[in-house]
Structures are given as C-alpha cells and as structure tokens.
Image: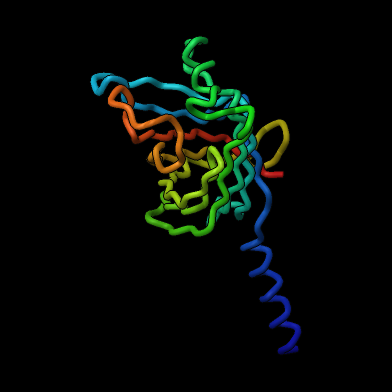
Length: 186
C-alpha cells in the first residue's frame, strides 16, 4: 500500500510540473527593436519572419526558448534603409540568413516576471544576453481548447559586439529589443 501511494504521488507531481511545447502565433506576435539615430531620435523596426518555440509548464513556468529570425525580413518602413541593413554593411543577410537565440538559464524575479539568459548568434558571432520577461496572462483558447500565453521580453544588445554595422557616430551602439508574444500550447 505504501509503495502504491508513493507511485501515485510521484505521478501526480510529474503531471503537475509536466513541460510542454509552446509556439509563437505569428499573427499576434512581434519581434521589434529601437536604435538611436544621430543621437537625437530613435528608429524603430521589426522582423516579419520568425519562429519562437518554448518549453514550459501550464503556467508558463521555467520556460526555455528557441528563436530563429529571418534576417532579410527586417522592416523599418523605409525600403532604401531596409536594403542597406540587409547588405554586407550591416546584417549581410545573404551570408547570415538568420539570427538565433537559445536560452541557457531561467530566474524567477516576481510573480509574473523572470530573467532568461541565452546565446544570441547574429552575423556569425555568438554572445550571451539576458532578457527580462513578463507573463501577461494565460487563457484557454475558445476555438482550440488549448492554453495560450501572452508574454513580453525586453533587453539590450550591443550591435558592435556582433559586428553589425561599423563604429559610427550616426548610430547608437545599443539596440533595445521588445518581443511581444502570443504563444500557443501544442
């Protein structure tokens, strides 16, 4: 009897903390950035093509992330600037068609907040970055009957550490990232 109870308790605990796969909903997610221009204004942009997968429990606790962003999908709402950003002067999208991120650690910082560290690879260079995360909420989708989570990730990247663009007084070195996600449990 005692062994049966122990097995039952272990099964219940395993079920409660079971990890599942979550995928970003591209229609309701955005990978955006801001960078200083001429040190007096900011230019905003985004990447239109990306895949973000997370592994987390039903409360989106202790998530791990895998991200792939198509470099050529950059959009700052200025075709000439976007073409220049895709060129060898900046992202060199032909040689480096994607930007990737793989999380390596997670730290809970509040009831709905966390920090996630990971390896960002861009322009052939890999460096560790830290993103601040917030779980905005979790619901059961009426159509799919599956869980959906809303998240926001923010952080700062030093573009020169990734050899993106040269050292120039017209651009800031720091790029502010803002990633708004709607993730669907699979």
